Image (cartoon, rainbow, N blue to C red; front, side, top):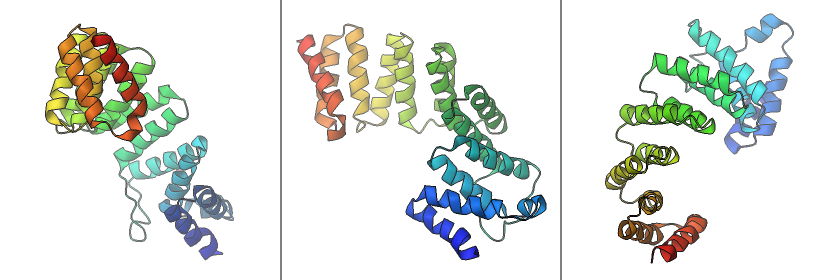
Length: 242
């Protein structure tokens, strides 16, 4: 019945029972008597089935649902806009498609959708960050650095993007550039304990022993308990720097 599959699905989403939510919405969709009945279902049914599918890593199902939603959004269809508000816009669907394809391991299609999203919104810095991560996986450091810089330019008020850029520069072997960028990240957010950790590593590579010791000491003083492994590493580095 309607309550069991529709409202029960919403309850499952709210409680985080995504496996049950997927099967409820899936049953609702597959119970449609004809393809026309299925197409007449409101968009939010496919949205929540796709959301549940993503949470349980049913990537192909999630991709299919969000592809349908993207197509409807591009055609300007919003038949259920007065019933349930979908917290997502057309370009966000493109970005979501990129995320789903990336999680599914299809990096080529992921890149395509991220690029399309950026063509429609140059300020969508999350897409730049995703593209940088893919480029790093492929050891394509010039592209990774370009995307990290684009993310910083699009959202200069987020110091974590400077940290990401600094780490990428370090991965590319640009230790001087990494140090400069990580110092900017440190100045922008002195409470982020991750920054002095990576800054200490970079300064050690640059043979700046005093600066590296100061950065490692600061990291150890700031680091929360979940960074126990990094704290042990920083202490080993301090011993080597003495």
